Image (tube, helix red, strand yellow):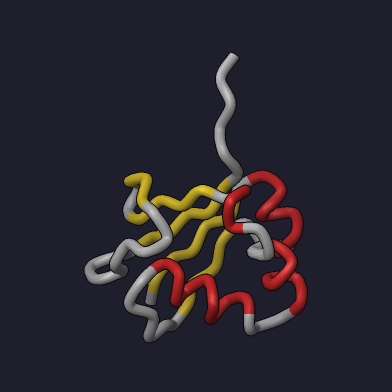
Length: 82
């Protein structure tokens, strides 16, 4: 079981702030594929991965990052400074 957390417009499109996901995914990209196949709202949220950042166990990673040992995966839009 992995806790999946969604922030900002990703959360708005999916409709929940977090959920527990049973997955066989080995990488973040495989998890995204599994989630996208669930329902249209997930597919829409993950339709442009260049507009999403991901963190595994609160460490910023790329989509090819392994999920071994992961307890939390968070998806969020890029942060802007100011």
